Length: 73
Image (tube, rainbow, N blue to C red; front, side, top):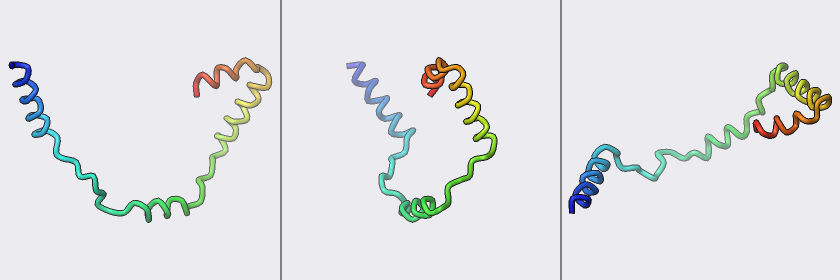
């Protein structure tokens, strides 16, 4: 009996603390998604290419590094 009262008390406190969620969006998100898709892809900075080259070079000299790289992905 006490457990039921505790559950009811917890339920009441949760309803009081958390406002109800409105599942309907306030606006249509599709136009924003279309604008985002129409934008050109961001350019990669030069140091990203240097880092990618260093990784490829390190793997070429030390093939066992492939396992280390896969582990960290």
